[in-house]
Length: 314
Image (cartoon, rainbow, N blue to C red; front, side, top):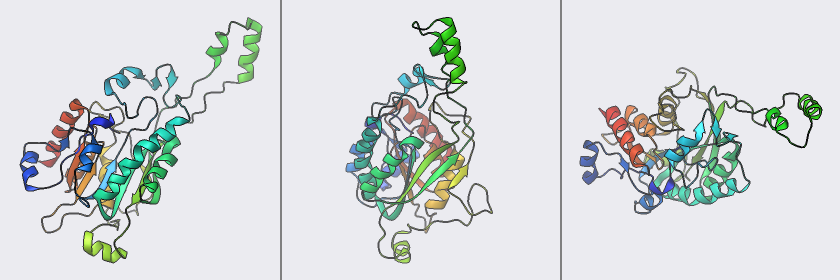
């Protein structure tokens, strides 16, 4: 997931005047992705693969990487476990933010093109509704499976701090609690909404016109030899390149390979990431022989992303 919305860095679509800038190592546009998308022509991209703000724990359209990095320590945001700071309006804020963004994806994608959008599990329904209401067809909900750390907290220390209870009462209530914790099972998955723009005719018609709408399961990057499933086991990345929610390049390569056509007659389909973060989607696109266009608001992240993508493109 990338940072602040009002600075998402998107790469300009392929055109002769931009190719020279790519040679200089610029794949990331440093501006609000919503403004960038409005200037682009229809049907530019073959795949949207992105990780937008989740609208929990300060990860919203006021995202500040440095502020969050100072607050997030060992699974705790402020005084609460990560994911426990929650208000009902968070889901609606996410929906209101994401729907117009997804409407631009719908316009910029070629007919039949796929949009893959990461989402936190408890708000994935709002993510899916926003994308669906923007004109997409929801095809599936994928799960990135990993081994997380348990973050639930016991409540004994709160009982001990109660000034209205004596020691005997505190001991009684602690026994009554029986070691119960905050409602958080060990996190082991992150959701990915799989959506598809409406096709232009039949699947075959659409493929012949746009080379989108069908998936390639012949040689998946992960678990080769097995038909790809909607539960994808990949460890979390060891190196996050300064980004607190970085995704593993292996997972992104797997998704690019399945959902975006490969090069034909010297023309590379373009993968678009409006919330590029540290550039992992761009790295995956380069390694899989696709073109890339990305946006990121955070200037430092944008520089990191450009360097990483340039290295992958060599």
